[in-house]
Amino acid sequence: MRLCLNVRFRARARGLAPVRWLASCLFARVAVSVISLHDRALGAYLAFAAGDALGATAEFMTAGEIACTYKGGLRNIVGGGWLHLKPGQVTDDTQMSLALGDALLAARGWDLRMVADAFVGWMRSKPPDIGHACRRGIRRYMIDGTLCTPPADDNAGNGAAMRNLPVALATLDSPELFARCSLEQAHITHHHPLSDAATLLLGQLTQILLLGGSIADCRGCVTEFLGRHPRFHFEPWPGNTSGFIVDTVQTVLHAFFRNGDIESCIVDVVNRGGDADTAGALVGQLAGACYGVQGLPPRWLKQLDARIVERIRRQTASLLALPRPLPLRAATPSSISPA
Image 1 (tube, rainbow, N blue to C red):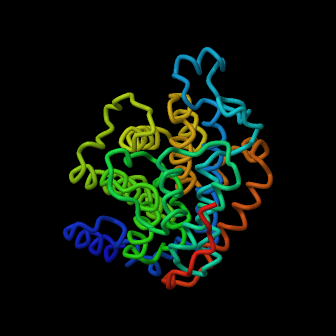
Image 2 (cartoon, helix red, strand yellow):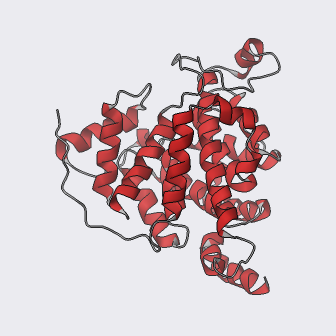
């Protein structure tokens, strides 16, 4: 343990925070068994989907409206909302994550064009909702084949961070690959320093927890992050719940650090309203990685779409089984037409 702490200290001194420490200690930490890693990974993915499905009901509502509509607060996955979803149905958060994960598995490594093609396939499936920046970025790729959207002020939404969990699962032993793949997938639709910083932070926190790190380790990582990006300070919570990435990260971190289980984290976030599906999904990702699949309320598993649950179970196991380090594949020619 002292060796790991010394490595962490030296890594932080170089500005690398806990991620390189975790990579250095990955094989030395006996407590992180294959089973516990799988349970944390599955917990992260299923809690992500549960937060998405629960939050979709309250999306764009205010906290007051939610409290008036759902006495005692929204605690069950009931569908409805502005998208008129069926109970257990998920939105673009989970759907884009699954599309990204499918591309990783199809390539048996990292092929950015296959990721972009997967996003096109998802958009063509007529999803219940798609964000403006996601639609614009995917359409640009379909028209000219470019894999990076130009930087823009209106690219600072939460759409890149919300779908990055499969990358975090596939690059657990390589901080450099994690950063590269995270930003490449992000830039297909979102290209902004705030989006980039948040996408990396949330993925790093997830990896810390997946590998058996503590909430205190996460606190240390966030403290270092806030020193570089003070705009994300979340205590006291500013009270904003929009899809702007700063608002989302502040909401997610505030709820994660003040609650002690998956259900409390997600219910806390969702009942604040606003972009409740994405914030609920992301806090679920962190809480699920922290507390494991055993901490997920059984009723939520029953309420979720069974097909989504099965896809997540299969994809989680397959992502963890990918070659390490994740191979970088040459970009394949796209089969997508603009039509």
